[in-house]
Length: 280
Image 1: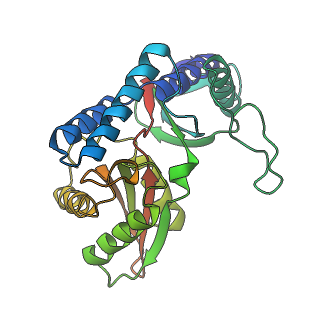
Image 2: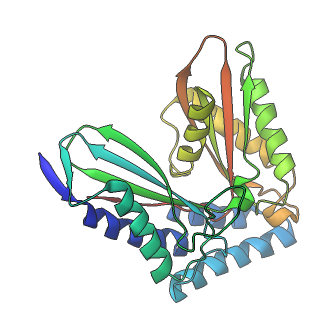
């Protein structure tokens, strides 16, 4: 049994909040540069150049990539041979978020009540997902998500007789509805199967996966590529100004489901899809 003090987790979460908010992920930067080389629309090329320049300024000057520094989701994969010591896990995670947002001078966007709308002034509480896995290590992934894109996310309980066509149609309808409002070029996380809540959880988690790594499931890889091609024919383009770069990547996660259903969730994410991880 390996002991890990929760203060180590607090420190890691604090650092990851700053890292995720100030450094554009390598896979996304790579995809944006590739899109810039292949884009033929002048306005689209100019927007992509500006977005890449924004990312470079954020990295060099240690500034947030976007003014909406998001509601933080924290994914904790805890080895079953790990024993947490020194305090409460949730308190440590939220303490890390609070510290990171203070040190990084990041906007605090969380309200205490969905109805009363009073700001907590700490960007906490975070949304915590825990999973027990084999081993004696602990992996933390921090995902700050702005609500310009979160608000455009959708879930649909399709019929079990539906198939890929209906899934593709739903994704295209959702992307069209998002239009320019969620700051394209997008990255889409798609959750298939499970229950209503599991599909939504899968869609958010899918955003963590690198968009330059092919899905290990051949059928899902094919579906991802089909969806990506169809979206990029919509003509929405970077920031909605036209062009063939509406989406940079599509990631799909799937889970077994009930014989009577086909849940499909789409988590729409903007060009600064953010996540950062550390293994302890």
